[in-house]
Length: 125
Image (cartoon, rainbow, N blue to C red):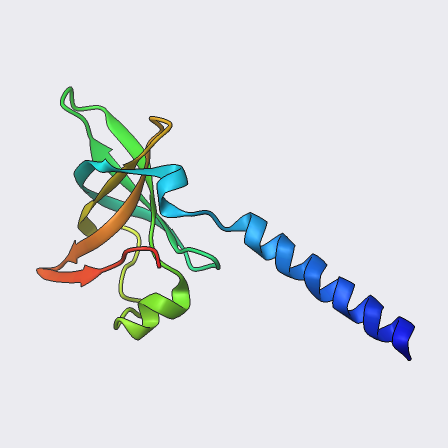
């Protein structure tokens, strides 16, 4: 009996460490001193843990279209804020206010999303 208990504890520790490793802190990926506002057309939405990811096409200053990845909060957290899975769809035009990734990639963390005149919070928790 004691051996089974020890094995169960180790299994729980292993599983907990795997999920903790998959998640990250905001400051390890994003720079709070680099705010950004992006307006573009939604190309894809992924509702998955630990974060919802939104992809938008944004025109740069030269007119080139660049696809940005936007990290939002967890599905559970955003549902509690009033989001639904069908709140956004491909083709919708959104304005994202958030923060840039530290590595300079086309990745941002959304603080708010403006969709059809309605501003909704989207920050990672």
